[in-house]
Length: 214
Image (cartoon, rainbow, N blue to C red):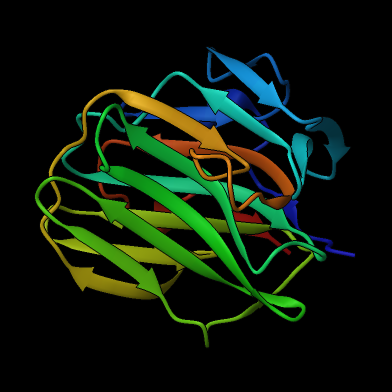
């Protein structure tokens, strides 16, 4: 069993002037925004607090909001637990600009009982994928993942450790929607649990990330 605990224990501890935190502790609203549920995602009690569990078959939540619309720099963090038994490719968070192919996404790519992180951003100015299938992590435990863009470089992190980076020019995205637990087009369902996401409109250093500690 994963014995790590979440260091930040109150909603006020997650707050930042330029950030928005979505705690997945209910199904009807996330981050103050109404949601639409598909399948039977479930609110469960975990060692980190309430979270939403997705079955990897038909469970998803949709939010009529793009929390990083207009951001020129950003940090996107997610606390989640990918679980065994899912499909090889699973999209667990997706933010989509309305009426275009511009989007942010996080995916897991499974290999046996391990996974690697796939981070991707597409914009009108450019796009970038960050994935290395040799950077594997065990399933069935909690992780913090982050994507950071400082205006010139996109970086991906797992548990505060830099995994990949690339120089890229990205344009701010317009208003849109978010899907959680699935690709926005309702394929590549995620099997696991998501506790929260934090979207910050600046490039945070790793020491300012949300943290998990043994």
